[in-house]
Image 1 (cartoon, helix red, strand yellow):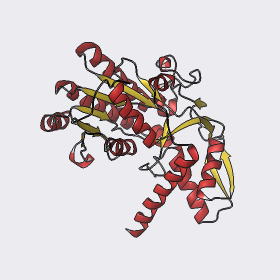
Image 2 (cartoon, one colour):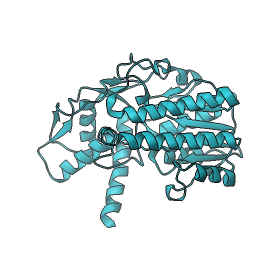
Image 3 (cartoon, rainbow, N blue to C red):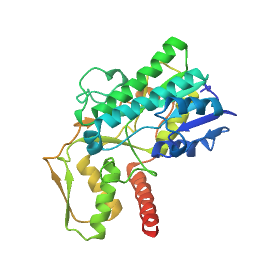
Length: 318
């Protein structure tokens, strides 16, 4: 495939490089002939339009991967809807507009599978966007991400900007967030299983019924897909990025218990929320371009658990 956009000798800004996705993007870009720009969160508040404009003026990136976002699990999304909506709207509005204003040649906005209707037909095609009601537990985050997609499309339409969007399925891997109130399902289960193993607990209780089906993608596979899209895609529509495989939360818990080495009983509290009943992305468009993932779930879970243990060791030594 002939590259649509060459990264060679370009300055690529990874906005949000301290996060799981941004860090994976930065790792993947090391194998390209480009300069990776990364700015610590403490040095640049992406919610501040003036600060973002000043950063673009000083650094003049050729391309941007917009991976920065306020993220969290079901509990955080449920408890802090205003924060999720405001922070994400401000981040994407400031970065996308500044990218246009400073002549950035290519921008890739990272969305989320939660943009799709709660009861969308499965697997979920890109065309399902805005065809039904959203899942209420993360509606604010989803609305913000939908706005980002529409911004990229609108700046393309009005100004001719080569701004694209990618929608990944549920992600996991090195650099994930391990926090009781903010973790997504895989890191939350890793923490819970590890703690139960260390305490020799005979059983653990997990949220929901365990029945919902989810699709997971290893974060370094996503980074590879994003670099692929940055170089090869310049179309109008957003592109799904998934593994093509789904698993129930109950079966996932069993897989993680095996990786962690927890042998106790796993029970579910059906009184707690499940989220959407099923979310499987249709990634046929991306596959048709010639990209596919490379990391199996068990392999990825082992890497994620090893990363968690390293973090736990560093925390214990601090």
